[in-house]
Length: 66
Image 1 (cartoon, rainbow, N blue to C red):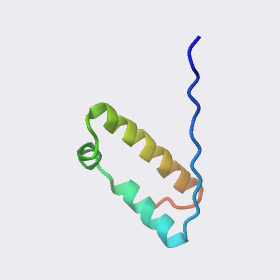
Image 2: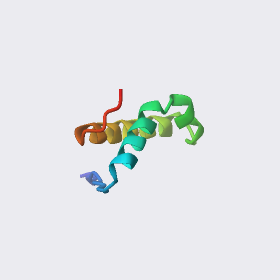
Image 3: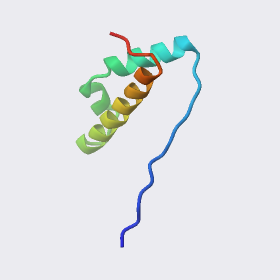
Image 4: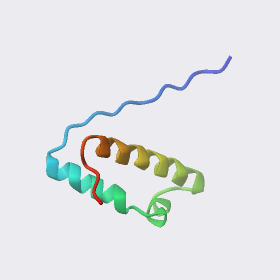
């Protein structure tokens, strides 16, 4: 039997201006910027997936810049 890995829940409170600024940042992040912060392509894909989830959470809270 394998060990089940549990998801992590992260909760934070932001003022509206910070939430919008963060939403703008994750909208504008490019693959090359994420890759520059990662040790390899596999980690870049993990970063990209996490950023996408953050972007979805911000959008669900009403911060989805066009």
